[in-house]
Figure (tube, rainbow, N blue to C red):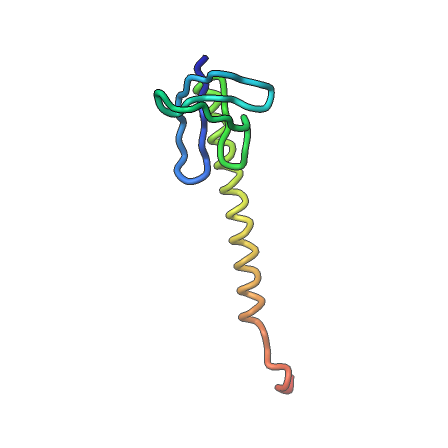
Length: 95
């Protein structure tokens, strides 16, 4: 059966594989011809397996949108800390 593997860790991509075996949590596939089968979790931190290209694309876009939100929040926190650092005063100076 054909499955689509969406990878969102380094460079976002969707690959098509012939899956040899599928369970509720894993898939087994051969990444190359005449290669020993490899087993992976269906969903992990860096990829997911899906039944259609549209499902894979939707999951890939959703995951990357979440990463953008997290990065924006981290940037806001870093800017807040920078502002706090710039506002520091020497405690020994009279106010």
